[in-house]
Image (tube, rainbow, N blue to C red; front, side):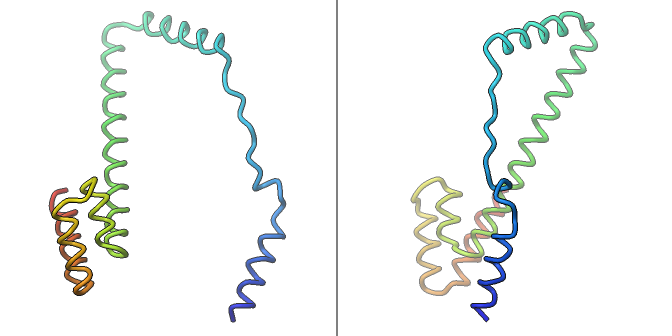
Length: 128
């Protein structure tokens, strides 16, 4: 079974054209292009009326808030998945270092996996 699975994976790997794996270089914009873009943006901003400026600021603030919220949800989801796999590591990442909660999670996980999992999930989900 393992040999057939390995041979299928290798066959798929070698059947895909090699150029799909290559990283294509990106040419960064020159300093002059950046300066021109800044000037154009400033000119466009000055041409807007006061109400249009206010509406654009509101749109940008809403977009930033939505991006932060989406990022937080993704981080929470990844922490929950990690907590299911390895509770003490999830607690370590959530707390940002070795704290008392980390040691409790580690001890509960060593004694029996389920209490460590429950404790870690309660801490992570309880504060969010």
